[in-house]
Amino acid sequence: MDITNVKALFFTGTGTTKQVTERFVQACGLPADLFDVTPFGAEVPTCTAHDLAVFAVPSYGGRIPAPMAERISRISGDNTPAVLLVTYGNRAIDDTLIELADAVSERGCIPVAGCAMAAHHSLMVNVAEGRPDADDLAVLDACAASVVERLGAAATVRDAELGTIPGNRPYRAFGGVPFHPEAAADVCVSCGACAAQCPVRAIDPAAPSTTDIERCISCMRCIAACPVGARSISGGDALTAARTAFAEKCAQRQESYTVM
Image (tube, rainbow, N blue to C red):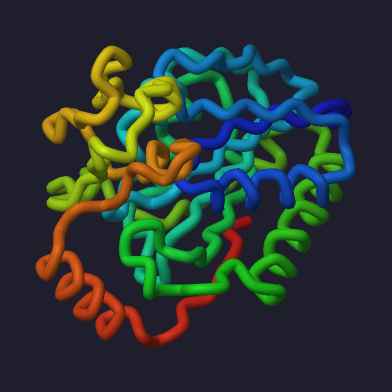
């Protein structure tokens, strides 16, 4: 196969999935276009048979983030080979990979590899600190090299297509997150940066110090986007207790791995 370009789409809250995507693309050694599809209404590309499409998401309760499913529904592929990257906070990816594979397959992309990358948890911030580390990134680099080699040796994309993909159908239920970011009204300068970056329009640009918790998916993008540090995750003692319990549950190191 003649692959001439990489088109990488990533959904990221605090930036880790972006960093993983950039590292993978760099390891591919091909010209690349990167698309941050996190913000609401983000541009998505058309992918050709000569592109390598990369789809990168954090695992949200073992599922792909709902906004990413919407972004994928707007792409167009042409038997485009696709790599699926999933970051996860040292617990498990559950059905994230198979759901992502199903979503991109419906849009004309053919999954040829998957990679699950252990990463610092964006909500339970005392879990998987420092991940991905050097060992994780070595897995990612090896995945990229293998994908490029396999596609170069394949006559058609179907020759490189993934067989068994881990996960279950129907996908596990996702009940949401009980903790949400909020803004300190006395610190917020109403610049609207958080509203512009929110993937689900949970922040009104006219009143950016408030958050619609019915829409909010707790991706933490608004916290990362705030230039004055006005936003933080709410929860008090309940959040502290949840973080402690989750850290105990996920104390054993989980490794990054590829699916080929």
